Length: 162
Image (tube, rainbow, N blue to C red):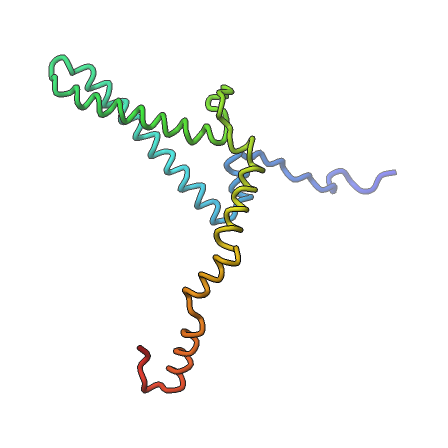
């Protein structure tokens, strides 16, 4: 038994093939998209600075025999490259194994996220939400004095609060 013509059947929606960037852009909020753009821009600037230091290093190294003062420029470029690579390694090592190599003391945060979260919660609780800390903050704010001055200035507008 046939229910209508095959031409009348609805056509399935075309499958969407999205790149990971497109998928994330659809899921992320506008604020998160802006953060992602800023992060990508910072990564591009950092990579550009590393490439610039490498180019300066190669040029200074190749011309150092003719111009001995370029030794200082070469040393500066070398220090810039070493610093950039050390910073990259340090940041990456917190979250994963750099270059996929399981170097000891890397991927620290994923392995210890529960312990880090517990310590952070205890720090916030003790330093910011403890009874003594809250009492100190309320006393420093002095709400009674502020309220009385506000009430007094409204009740007696000609009188200036000092």
